[in-house]
Image (cartoon, rainbow, N blue to C red; front, side):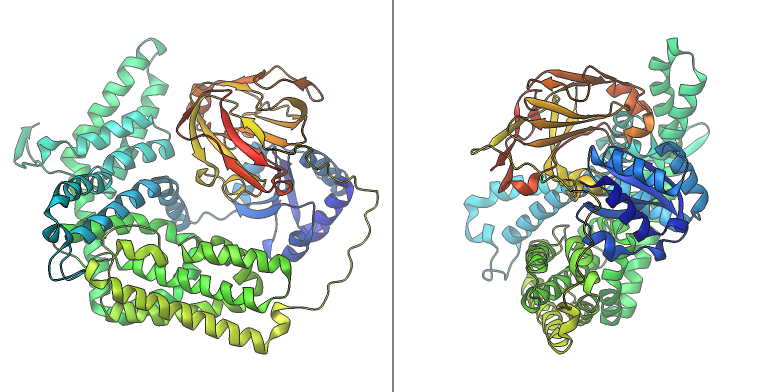
Length: 638
């Protein structure tokens, strides 16, 4: 990579006078800008040295890659004259330049807590959908499946138990995820959730304590009371950690925190928040009942724009309340899921139309994969990679979404569980409404595809613009990247012991969207970091939180310990290797104090990324569940 040229291109794209401050981490430039509207995004997207861009928390981040980012940053500082700052300092500068938006801050809070829970809720939702198929009448005949085949009764009962678990014990899940977000002990958060779903609460009655008559009520399936309780726990725990001497802190902080949280939850917080939760659910149902199909049509027209703001991340908190209320025999069911499905399919249809319209092979490849993803319920690749880039497909899709959502509201199509908001979402729909749901999905696809295709045909220059001007020759020759020499699969070992997690589940856009390359993540149980391949250390950061290695067969591997742990400036990390050193697979690279990292409020998840993934036919996972350091983790098929 020509680092000087890439730095120059970045400066020209964001604007020299637009730069306020700059820092870098293991993979990306982190910039604070005066005005994001002045960014030449097209220039950055077309730059081969830039792997991706995104904005978060007032920072505009440009993904360059391990090793290269250091040199590009040095050139950027040299050319602009900006003062070098740490990522921690940059965060403070960004906070000063960013207006506080309490609504968006609350949405982000809900997102941070509920996004990690979605796999559990979806699993329970799809199991619930399977149970609906087994028990619904008039679906395959006048009788239900288990009535026609009594031998399946036991299977249905087991599925019913499995499907109910994530929703009945939802406060436990919220307690764990909420405690992590609020900086409390996650196991104490789980204890608070367990208290709120204890079987002893189900019988009701009254407690007489402190001169008060305290109504006994269960909080199974409740979200808002659990959120409030775990937030209360975090306040007590943090305060006690600061006030109690180390000799008694370990024993008495958990005791006092749980005791105070329990008392206040059962006496005040739980009842008040449960009432608030009921008001919220009843209010949403009232709006739906009052506006009917007109309301769902409007919602369908604005759902995709809502996704762009991130506000949709708060919907699972509302949907779980709607589903729980419907199971209890009242409420309107989950109409939000239905609208989301119509919107997602419409965006996928528009992207499909782009595939047939464009002659650009890169856009064809992107639109084909993004369309499939959107039709299955994940629209970000379609939205940001295709439809918003071309603009008109995004707005054409809104027409299809609006019409289909209107029909769904008119037919009273509702979901009774959570799932994948796309064509396969029929599994989550009330069994009697599945045919109508599929009809609405077909309408959404047909209208969005037709409008996009016809508009694109008459405005072909929007999809197939004329050839771009040739890029200027680089100031100095760029060395061609060495292709992997392996003729078989290259195996990458796990650098740590722990639990394997899909890279897409990591709470960082750069890794989850695989901007740096494909790979896997491991939630570590041991802080010793081992070499995943035999090769050369190409990058050894001063902050000791990341390593870049080039295997002897040409595979380039990045090990990144924790999220945003660059802010720790090397604290809680040690290293035993230096750049240029040759290591053997399994050799110790360094250590990380996992307990201290967690206590400092950082996620210690270890990312293992093959940064030259595009030179391989496929990156395949070799492990799931628990792994030990040195176990096979990935295979790169050459």
